[in-house]
Length: 171
Image (cartoon, rainbow, N blue to C red; front, side):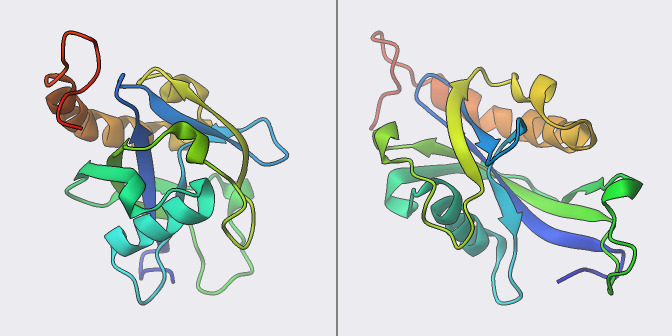
């Protein structure tokens, strides 16, 4: 599903832990890291697509996470010319994304990569919140910055509930 301007609707997922770190995943068979993300099917709204992609890419489901927030508007990035499939119709020039920030509620040992029809990732790690901006492929950096700037406010609200032990209260 490509919109009239050539953008494929997509969701992005920033999954964080109680320490404010984020889930950073390595693409299978490559030295390329990113947040979980994926396309929105024609019969899905962004939240439904987010839960499906979360399951397919991480093995986590709705009961394993809490939604802290989402971006207000679509965030877009263009693909570099070498990645645009010029012979496809309709032509896809990039992605438009709604981003979600989630907090994991379960033990991270629940993460698995064999739930989707095609395995996307083969490794992951918790990293500091802003680390992905230095590590993600260059053409996604601007959209990552916009998503993280907007959604970081939700994480700040959550970490302001930190107890003296250093963990979020209210679990």
